[in-house]
Structure formats: structure tokens, C-alpha cells
Length: 182
Image (tube, rainbow, N blue to C red):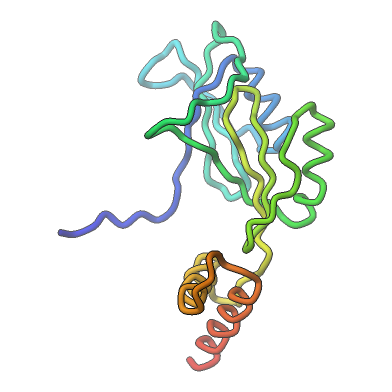
């Protein structure tokens, strides 16, 4: 059976409340430029807002003026979205906690994930969001995923529970060697 080959995430659409709540948060707090809006073509009573999360792709929000913000956390359940993670630079990551608090958003503070650092918080409608910052730069010609895939195999070989700095270093060295061997 042949697979369907994806080429990345095209966009993610979330259900919002009123238009201004979405613009205030996605553009005003997270700095995602508001790109455009139009009616939801499947439901003309619903508005469709488009934001650029920084990579030229899109985050879109359905809004209706008769909906009021409800910050109740999304329920855990099969098929429900747990969280959405956005990549940020180290400089942004080190400022994120204070800046979120300035905007009135409680957050987890810095969380060490081994190969990345994370910070979690809920947006005004209860969706859990993560700001993630890799602890490494991939060698030229390779991606973060290439390094993580190689580091995973190294960690499995040595019997480690999770990827550590040592596995990342060894993976980067191995990939760098592949590049120079070509």
C-alpha cells in the first residue's frame, strides 16, 4: 500500500470566541502578525482569522461575536488536542516567562526536556500552549529532526530512558562526519 507523503503542517485551526480576543492574544501577546480574515466558507456566520506563527505557515482561528471567552482548560480525552508547541529562539525563551506574566498569563516556568527547554501556559480560551527552544543547532545541511532521529538511536543503543546532551553531541558528530564524507 502506498503512503500519502506530507510536506509539513499547512495550518492549524482553533475555535475561538470573539474576534478581538483572538487578535489581542495571537498578535498582541505572541507577536504573530495578523495576515487576513474572511468568512468561514462553510459557515458564513463564523469569521476566519489568519495569523503567521513565524515560519510563513498559518494558525487560523474561527470566531463569532456572540461567543464569550471561556478559559476552562480543554478536556483530556481521546482525540482531543493536548497542546500546541511553538518554536522560539533562546533569547525569546529567556524572556517568555516575564513577558507572559506582564500580560497576565500564569505559566509553568522553565521545564527541561533533555533535548529542548519548554514553557507551558494556557491561552484565553483554555488551550494549552508550549514555547519550545532546542538546546542544539543541527549541522549545516541537516535538520533538528535528523539530529533527534540519530540521537534516539544512540540512546536506545546505550539503554538510556531519554535523549541527553551526550546523545545530541554524538548525533551531531556522526552527522557532521556524514557530510564531510560526501
